[in-house]
Amino acid sequence: MCVSADLPFAAARFGGAEGLDQVVTGSTFRSSFGDDYGVVLVDGPTAGLMFRAVVVLDTDGTVLYTEQVPEIRQEPDYDAAIAALV
Image (cartoon, rainbow, N blue to C red; front, side, top):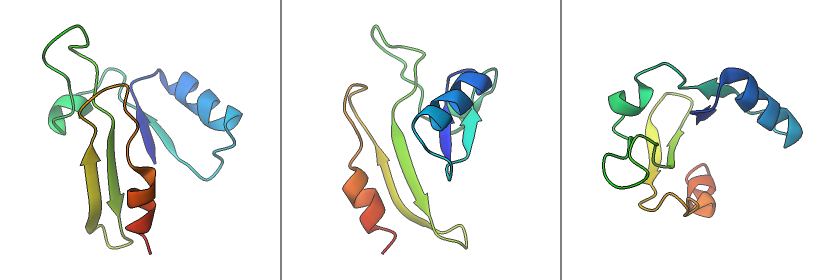
């Protein structure tokens, strides 16, 4: 699942354009998701935007891996997230 602050149709269009057919997209537009999960930036010029964050769950819902990227321009460690699945 990919959760985005984009409008729902924009998030879905991105997934289609990138060939992410197996990825369910969700939108946080007009929701409290960012506040509920503690991923809203509160200081500086990017205040109000959300951190990039990765959460990997197993089929039982057990959290296997989490990462909250400290710099908005930084990519998460995708290799570590994938490694948590094997």
